[in-house]
Length: 193
Image 1 (cartoon, rainbow, N blue to C red):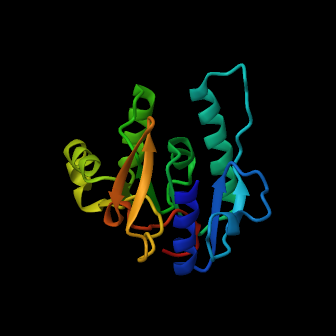
Image 2 (image 1 turned 60 degrees about the horizontal axis):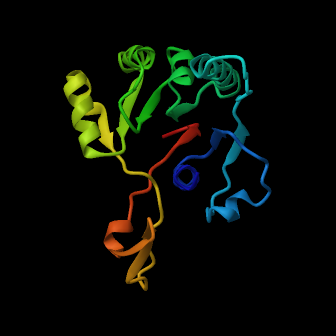
């Protein structure tokens, strides 16, 4: 959650309007809680718990409804997202970027992703690591120029912090400050990019 909030914060500093679609609990101090300064819109994405349906069908229904909301309410907006179903159901002429954190694990998602990646209005394929970029370049060589590595968004560690202690299975290890720094990038829906 913190990465998404920081990403939207960066996007809001660059664009005139940003809206984040997410599962949201109407937390009044959400911006302060995550330490973001920009006030971007947050809309609750459709995520009804259909207990009797398999997860893949729930994702399809949620993606379809979210895409309808975006298509109707944000007609001229650029979309950056990770939801395969939402991106699949977007208007075919809408410019978008697709962010991936891993290779799809199910055949249906591989097929869906392949269809999304073949669209001419795909502007960027964003991966969160260099090995993932290489794998997508191997699978989709025609997209090599569109693939960008942008690590998860986070704030740099304050300069006065020399070491961070991380606890792992009862042991503590020291991590140098440079290992904790990350690049902040953007996520959401904006009127420009």
